[in-house]
Image (tube, rainbow, N blue to C red; front, side, top):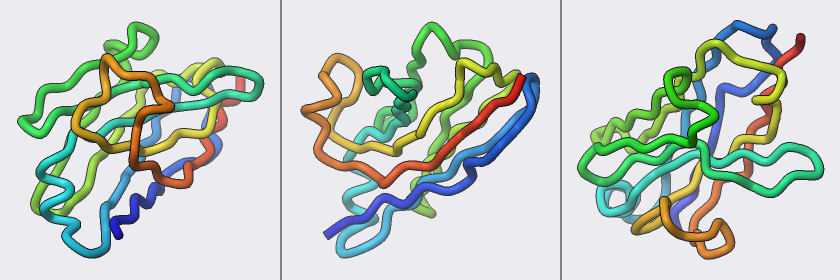
Amino acid sequence: QVRLVESGGGLVQAGGSLRLSCGASGISSSTFFSTNAMGWYRQAPGKQRELVAAITRGGTANYADSVKGRFTISRDNAKNTVFLRMNSLKPDDTAVYYCAADQKLFGITYQDVRYWGQGTQVTVSS
């Protein structure tokens, strides 16, 4: 069983930066990580979970329009880790951020995503 574990959330002022990390551990984690797209979703109170950024097995990144130019997703296949660098944070970025993995992430609904982390809270104060 593979586990996804996020870290790096916290409280930051508007305009600040955070970096989220998500590690995959468990049986066959290396194979799992190298054969799946990885991504970050977020869910704010009262809102639907939304895809923020995803990166394919080959390293192609895609972003939601709301974060383009501010967030950067990257992956380190040797360490089974995916990162989300978040710059110029806004109060609207406040949410629980979830690491996710599946064969593809863009173009599918979040209910169909098979692998999830437990989430990490990001709070941006104005």
